[in-house]
Amino acid sequence: MNKIESRKPGSSREATAAAGRLGARLKLARQIRGMTLKTLANAVSCSESLLSKIENGKASPSLPMLHRLVEALGTNIGRMFEDVDGDEGIVFRAGMRPLITLDPLRRGEGISLERVIPYSAGHLLQCNIHHIEKDGESAGPIQHVGEEVGYVLTGHVELVVNQKSFRLAPGDTFVFKSDLPHHYRNIGEERASIFWVNTPATF
Image (tube, rainbow, N blue to C red; front, side, top):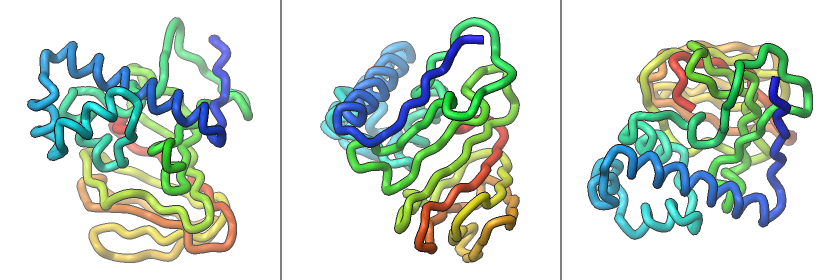
């Protein structure tokens, strides 16, 4: 099994590097599909200038825009953040799992995703631990194909699914179809963490 180094957000250098890696992979995916900046920008409803900044690591997409980008490019978010080489692993040790911070230049609105199952085309499930800092919330609402289930590990969160609000505490679980618009936020005084599984892989 290849050793996976954990990536802990925090420094501006790491944030800039993360934005650069994401932008380069988005640009490569666009070029492989033979799409122009204008074509992709139109497909995801953003300006060419913003898309160019994203590809050059000078801006970071929101989570809804990132979903639109990977859908238009025929890929998923996992491919944008991870490199997987060699055989698939079975065990991923504490402290060694990749940590993804969306919108790294803006601290991802206080949300990071800890990979429980590192990306691989061989997995039908996708699983992350969503860490939501105090006052953090997801960009959204988001809609995509699939189904998802979650278990609140720590903290208190509000989950909104199809405009219905649910207040969740440690030990609470949820399940819903992913095509229903959904988003969530931390409503407590401490960091919240949710063990979150979805299928098919979209992150």
